[in-house]
View 1 (cartoon, rainbow, N blue to C red):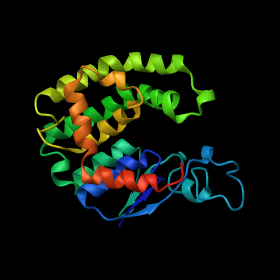
View 2: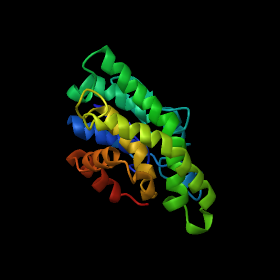
View 3: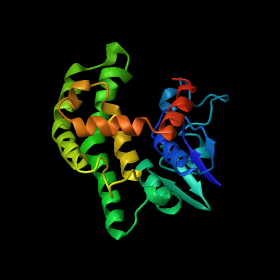
View 4: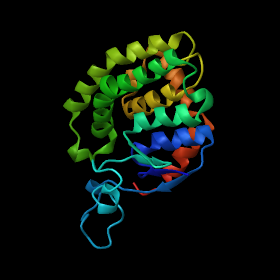
Length: 218
């Protein structure tokens, strides 16, 4: 059985969403980020990213990771590409061209969007108010305007990123875009992007993942 390591309040949410979409059973091991613990070295500390038991799975000390039939994989977007291709049916590629496009959108999300969207999340919502830097948030918002326009244009044709259907590309990209929701001004004038994100978030598998996430301590 597939094992997914990582708490819901991490990038593991992407892998859990995909598993739910694919109807893929999995074992969930809730590994928490070490920086969220007051004392990761405490004898009663929960399993975390610097725990020896987890470092034996992923020596990088980051979540998520998965194990599947003796294969260990790290990096959430790459994990989703693998799971979609092996188990996802129409979520994965129909041919080599789609395989290339799925990989392209994953790398695009990681390089063009996430470095900025995560700063929007941190400095508009995630950090305590006293630790937020409005200038950092505004710079990130400015940096996202061009890639969001590209994304809106790509979605305008069919409403999806690859093959005219919902695929792992939509999971990967929408999970990165989700971090920018605390800046609603970014979505103004981008109807295809806004509608696509709403549709992705209305999917039962996403709703299930988020409901499970809400049960987890913040």
